[in-house]
Image (cartoon, rainbow, N blue to C red):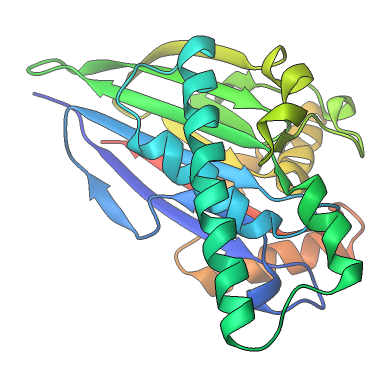
Length: 261
């Protein structure tokens, strides 16, 4: 019997921000049972210090999702290169729309546009072997958007950040300007492993990931809180409660839960 994946994504913007100000991105964009030979998931966290980082995060996530190569450091560089090309096309269309609406770029926006947007990237591909109850996963990451795997009540994978102390205010970020990515390209990380019936995987942006690791390090089972989510409203309540308790900083929060069934 071949295994399948069941996935669902939840997200909320920063407290005090509207949904239009949400700058994370994820793929796929709709809930579904994921059936196929190779299934790809991606998540990106747009950095607020860059202009238009939300659209850039979406381009990064989609570029990974549309790639065909097995995730690796080398293939990730190709994904980023293609994303930068897509960003240039998107930016040109954005500037045309601004001009058509008689809202040309103002002087205070010029530096942000020239510097470019910034975002993290996490991508994972699951290979489902025909007729097999096990499969393989491969992941790449740049920055502090994380993948956690849980098997039998134990966190078996913490990638790319392995401890809650590993989060800081200056993660490595990808720019929409390829000339600014030389340092980042050297810090792409990859990981791989196997999966079987009952395994769970969680992709999440940094604020939520920092809570997850800290709770697990204290002997908690944070994945059980995440498994109990049945609707987006419950995710909002969970995040709101963690923020108010001072257990999670106020940032966009995005989670994809993947179950092997």
